[in-house]
Length: 322
Ligand code: NAP
Image 1 (cartoon, helix red, strand yellow):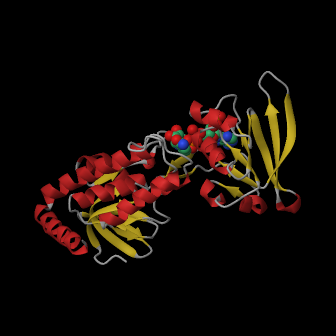
Image 2 (cartoon, rainbow, N blue to C red; image 1 turned 180 degrees about the vertical axis):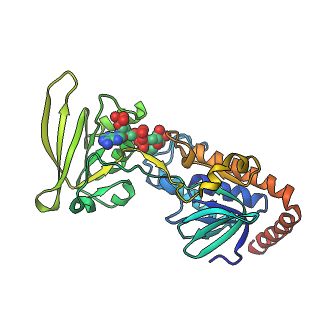
Image 3 (cartoon, rainbow, N blue to C red; image 1 turned 90 degrees about the vertical axis):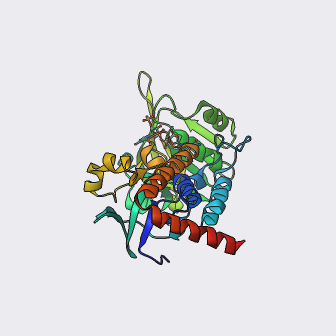
């Protein structure tokens, strides 16, 4: 529960960017509130393996890294509000973060809200099949002995194939003649016995077949060659066909003023929400730290006395907890 309704800093999202920002703000003695509608860790929790986060020479699984970030986040003392942000707008000299629980006013806000699955109409998913179609792989955690079809040819599809094939048979359906994923990931996937990769394969329709399984009508080949049609039966379908920024809550006015607000250190964007196809936990964490340092510098200049008081308070509470 949030006690005051005014904070020095608000952070929207508790993935790697938001957590890094919270940890850094705590180091500056800035009192921060973090809004997160789901579990902390963001998409990192779904990554099969993270191999470029400095400090883990042999790589680390996404869930294990997320657990470590979570531990550091808890130690930061930032206040966590488990509510979805519906709007972010200006309110007098503050930025107001609105959730079902009311408005929280902040001197500065770091938007680290990540991405959401891009809407796709190709293939169209009929309502009766939607309970077996997923956009994120952690929704299938615990599924064993099933056949899972994954549509997509990027890092997400191939990363999902690695984790799903530990306990299931997986078919990756790539519509083009080449993949977009890292070559090393494609090589690993192809060496997995339980994974089949079908290139130049498009799913045209999805239907519920016998026993509630999915029946995917596919067309393979094309281009200069012959094309063939076939049905693929699968227990589940994962659409790994790209993502888009999850920032629909930011008001039009703030979007228009975004550059000026960023320069002043009042509104900063960090992590996947601004990274397009460069979505990596290591990049997001650095951006979160950077954003937090800009916010802290702004607060030092503008409300120096208030921050100094908080510094004393936070230091005091750390002493008490030792
Ligand atoms: P992406 O690289 O944009 O790949 C999207 C894939 O979906 C493409 O192969 C695309 O095909 C296909 N696609 C799009 N619409 C489709 C449709 N209607 N039907 C069939 N296929 C469709 O997206 P991503 O895989 O989400 O990865 C983006 C970034 O996320 C990466 O660059 C990486 O930074 C990050 N990421 C990294 C990891 C990791 O490092 N392990 C894991 C996940 C994500 P076309 O190529 O034909 O357009």
